[in-house]
Image (cartoon, rainbow, N blue to C red; front, side, top):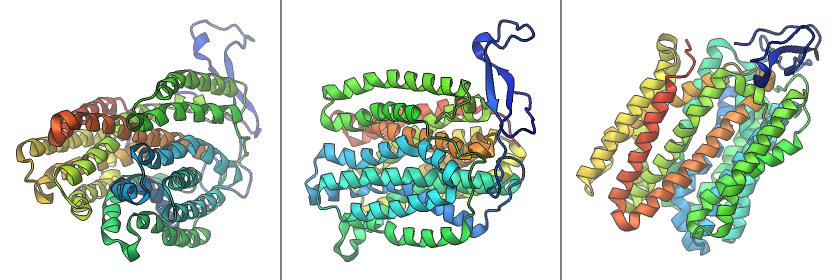
Length: 513
């Protein structure tokens, strides 16, 4: 662990960190080779302090409001799945355009998350939360009124950008206005909200499409956001305290562009490639990804060494809790989204369930996830981060039970028969995600809360998109030759392998109590 650096000067430099390249060579007095300058900033009143006790407190209604803002983007990532068949019929959209309806939102969301956190740190998190939520409402209305497929794609990209402005402010506000047991509870509720939103998106989407409110059909899955956003805006003005970093930092333009290029060059071809038939541009784009990622790391590392303000400070990754948590979050989130995609298609197309009945099948998973999330803080107080390992084992047992049920009971399967497997999987996921998120941000300084939250959510969102693209493509590629049952079984076996990996990685997490 790095030694503490204390100084009364608000912009003083501390030089206790040695670059990895020079650690092996002893330094003589006065030799400053490989020394990285770390700026220590003190906050400017009247914002919430960057370190030490918070000067503003997030009330219960305020926490509800920011969690509402956290739920909306994740619900909209998954809610559109059940509406895609209706969109295809109504707007005459082919497979490639349907992939863009899903992928355009996810890519824009992932690319801009860290930038949204940085802007909120500087301009004020409540202000960015309000702007992002208002933009989310407007773009949801545009999605619901889209006259054709390309208009819907454009509105979905804009909706993803609005989500990227709103969501990082949620975690940053929680970090800056809570501490101790209140922060642990708030983070557990955030994790519960994130997991429930992913499940509830498909349940709610099925209900809305089946209800056909006012003849709106699939458009209701977007239009329902508008009244929710209006309520959220009123509550946010009244209940969410304004916080910001002590010293506003300039936008890192090179870092932003390179991060955007890295994520787009990876996620867009993986999302669009299967539907488009893997044309040349998808392979060129995938070839660009490692080059862009390497250039991004070099630019950010150099900016960090020079005391500038990188978009994603590499020094944050020296925090053991964040670094190891990110390594586990990637396979967990990829597996989670792939699992949800395969389950949605299998229930509706393989077992012939309607959207409402398919949604009811997921209710045990949602209830188990929520109950486990609420129990998380008490379990962590007693067993520490071993709770995450236990959750992974439970999740694996649930997926294994579901695999056996699909293989032995097909096609005479209903919600009751599938309930044990989805319940155990949800219980295990609920013991992992909230605790993991709390652990990852536990050591992030308050004045970097927006950036730290943006890093975590970007990793999560990118992994969600990657999981749908990779496991979804594998599943759909297996269907023609193997049939839906065996394609689902084969893909879930891959998911089971990812669960084993997360269990092994969880044993390397820092111990917490």
